[in-house]
Length: 171
Image 1 (cartoon, rainbow, N blue to C red):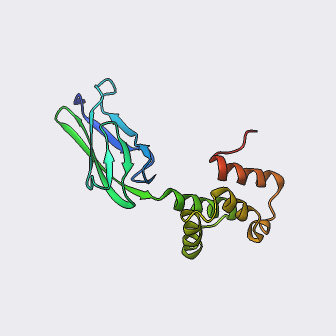
Image 2: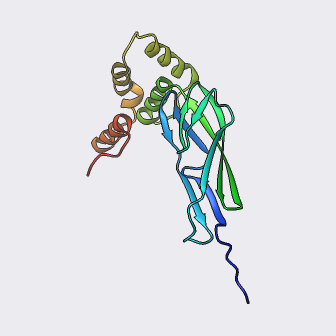
């Protein structure tokens, strides 16, 4: 029985987090390639990044993407090692940070996905400057819907940490 290992062959190639990523408009987001070589001692492959719609999404040679407009864009990534190449495609959804903030308030504080009318209403209140984010968040926390969740003190603190710090509280 003869086993042949081809030096430089790429066994698997993907992007950490899967095929769908969400980025905030105007902010940088790092995509991280995950590569497994047939020969673990082989040199790392070359990664090339290509935004199908570069007017909507820029990507640099290190996989840092930045959304230029609200859209959903396909990103094509190639890992090349010698004569071997693997291809990967992912979808980048570029969203408005204010819309993301309002959606987060619904999800974390009220424990549900926001309805379109509610999200749009709060979005325009914030974008117009009629109210600041802290005041809107306070309104969510003081709402009957949130109070009716009847959270324990610990769960209440957990909700606040997840909403405002995007993490679990320290133990």
